[in-house]
Image 1 (cartoon, rainbow, N blue to C red):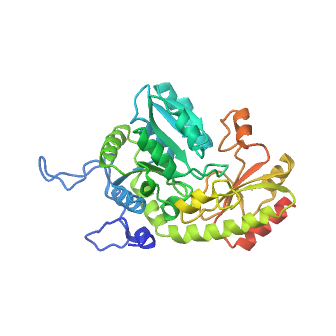
Image 2: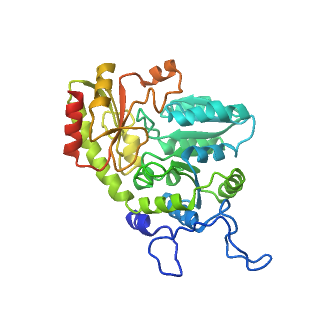
Image 3: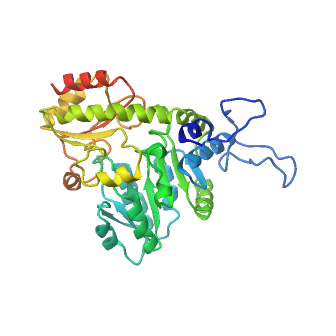
Length: 376
């Protein structure tokens, strides 16, 4: 089955009424026929038919043995970190989403885990960061917000050689453009809030698994922690997935035209996009993904230009988040990475001149016109 068809039908849910849309089972609990006899559902923190359907859909898209849906992407990461033990060490991409960095440093480290943040596009740097206590490699590719690319296959070789779990955040490209499990990853994470949902109207997170034992372990943790996705939000995700291929293609088309516009603008000093051929890791993403996505970061000539752009955009919204039908512009230094130390941000290029675009599905001419006016 092609992925476009999977997006529409991959939930694998049938209803006795013949409903085409998966019903919203807005029930906290389910009655049992007798002791030891029930229809597969007991309590919605454990499982719910609507959530089960969206988990089936996301698992099928990623080619996993199963998936677990959470209330947010960070809730999914929190549960995943609970599968490790005090003293365990994780090697992670240094240019991570700021919320992931905040979670790891302010919450997870106090529970006894340690992290080494390195440039995971450099296999030697990753290998050198591994210690006797290392249990996993956690990568984001392309990264947020600098669009750095890591080869999943090369990280898989390192992980397998050291008996480590390889965890990949696939939020930016989604399984429509990239399938990390097929490239050697063990677990895939998503902020389902973003492209999977695609309409800026719900929060969600997912873990998808290659191995049954990992799913079973995390499902126990998930039911114990209780940060499950609600039935209504599960339904919104199912609805969003149906248009994922169309949205990803249109947004990528728009992004590539905007990249060309930005590269030719006098006030734009540098453009960061995974699909630029002069990127040192372009061959990696070309070989491992079928597309480059619709996320762009760009550095302008001064902070004054940043202030002007954020005030003057009209069609484009100055707002956090990404992956929706609407085009959003974000100032990473004070928004997504506001809690990262200034020196660390500057080292990575997250300065007071950097802007990030999540390109939507509007007509690209209107978006370019909006940027033209805003940049002046």
